[in-house]
Length: 304
Image 1: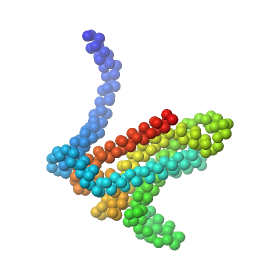
Image 2 (image 1 turned 180 degrees about the vertical axis):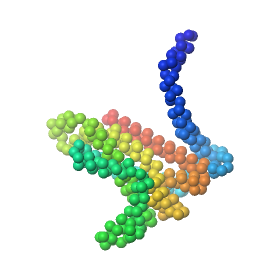
Image 3 (image 1 turned 45 degrees about the vertical axis):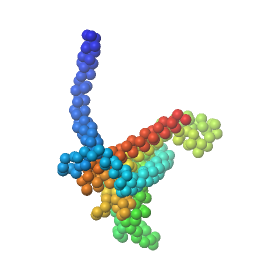
Image 4 (image 1 turned 60 degrees about the horizontal axis):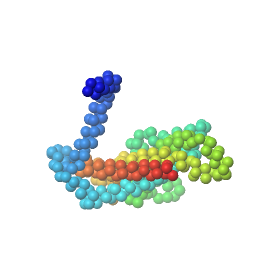
C-alpha cells in the first residue's frame, strides 16, 4: 500500500514544477479553444440570435441545412469545385516550380523568394490588389492590358462564369510558392545515390522522376494536399473582399458563394448564430473526413 502512495509522490516531486508551468497554457487553451468549441457544438442544436437565450431544438438546424437549404447546397458545390481545382492545379505547379528552382545558385534562390512572397504577404492586401486587377472600369489592370491588344472591357467580377476561375487563379498564385518550398525541402532529402543507381540501370529522366522522385515525395505531397485542403475549404477573404455585393456576399447569382462566407452571412448578417454553428460543424466534419481519406491514401501508397 505504501508503494502505491509513494509512486505518485515521487512523480509529483519529479514533474511537479513542469506541471505547474504548464497550467497557464492549459488555462488559456481551455478558455480560448476548448470552451468555444464545446459552446459552439451546443449552439448548433439551438435557435440563437445573439440576444435572446438559446432555444434548444435538437437536430432541426442540421435537418434544415441538409434537406431544405438550397443556398447551402449551392455553396457546398461551389466550394468542392474550387477546392478540387485549386488543390489540383496548385500542387502540380508547386512541384513544377520546385523541380525548376531547387538548386543552390543565386538565380534559383531569387526565384524561390519571388514565388514565396505572396504566401507571407497580407491576404487582405493581396485581395485588394486582385480587386484592382479585375476592376471592370478602364483603370483595371486586366481591362487595360486587353485594351492594348484591341480587346473590349470585360465585367470580370460581374460575370458568373468567371467567378470560380478567378478565385482559383488567386488561390494558386498566392499558395504555390508555399508548396514549392516544401517540395524543395523534400527534393533535397532524396539521396543522389538513388538517381545514380537508376541511371546505371538505364532509367531516363522521366523514369527517374516517376520511379524515384514521386514515390519519395509522397509524404510531402500528402502534407501539401491536406493543408491545402483545409485552407481551401475555409476560403473567405477572396469572396468577401473581391466579390461581395451590397446585398449579396456571394457575388452575382451567388456564383462565388462558399461555405465560410455563407456561415458568416447567416451568423453575422442575419444573426442566426445557432444555424451558423451547425454550418461550422458540418464544415468541420467534411474537412476531417477528407483529411482522413487523404492520409489513408498516402499511407496505402507508401506501403506499395
